[in-house]
Length: 149
Image (cartoon, rainbow, N blue to C red; front, top):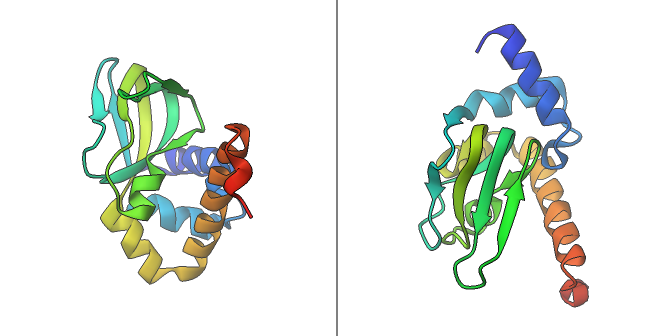
């Protein structure tokens, strides 16, 4: 990744709540283990009930998260994070992810996530705190917040 692309990626990451509060060098470490992937409309990223192998940040385009059991569809746009629950909890996917329009995604593979946790616990502590906050906000906005103590 050239310096311009890296600076653009750091700028994008700095605006994403799950990466809030990191220092420039910490963003560089995170980017060092991520993959930037390009997808076309209609591509399937993962299917519901499949093993969770990565979490994603939508850098551009749109991804549809579809739940077969409820028929729910959620649209991920630039800056949105998805796939984090399975990576953190080591569980299967709760939705399918299908590219709605040509997209660029930042992918953080589960094994790299675990590697980062062992290598840089302070960075991971910040990221995991932010993930907890994002998940709590989602839970509250869904009306299911009675489970938060």
